[in-house]
Amino acid sequence: MSSKYEPLWKAIQGKALDVCTLTFDEVKDICGFTIDHSFLRYKKELKEYGYTVDAISLKNQTVSFVRLQMIACCGLNCAQCDARIATVNNDDKLREKTAKKWAKMNNAPQITPETINCMGCRAAGVKFAFCDYMCEIRKCVVAKDYNTCGDCAEMETCAIVSAVHSSNKAAKNNLK
Ligand code: SF4
Ligand code: SF4
Image 1 (cartoon, protein in one colour):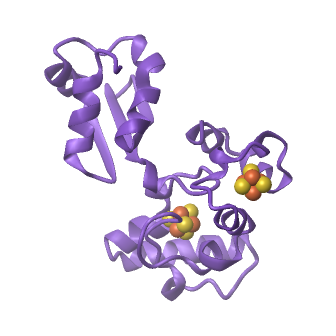
Image 2 (cartoon, helix red, strand yellow; image 1 turned 30 degrees about the vertical axis):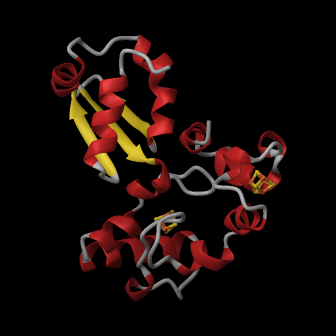
């Protein structure tokens, strides 16, 4: 049985967006009450509706939701990735900026603006070459027929995925 937040989960699902940000006032309009602390306890119910909570901003009084399909095998949020944002918006300036940054960061001059095309690790459509067929995490998840490392009993001790989780706590949390 769902909690008092069920109308919100249904509303998010009904919007059918990859990412969706609502103000606290909009949440109140949907639920009929002000968002409270119990939201943190109940938010896991949202997974049954195909979404998860991305971020809560007390400063901006907003809460953001992301479609589960946007969470990569390792837990990174593809919706926040510059490669995906550049692809969705066909933004060549962002492709250029991203390629420059990633080529330097990975010492990989083969990363050019033309290679920056990706709809997401688990989404249908074009993928960035590394994420498509070089990423050991994605390869392992696909081989085991999991959705993400979150389905794997070995995640806590896995040396492969810990390379991401040791520097990105949010990625690990996205898989819980
Ligand atoms: S799969 Fe694509 S969108 Fe996701 S992290 Fe990799 S490059 Fe970015
Ligand atoms: S073994 Fe590691 S990389 Fe493979 S699915 Fe499990 S947690 Fe992910």
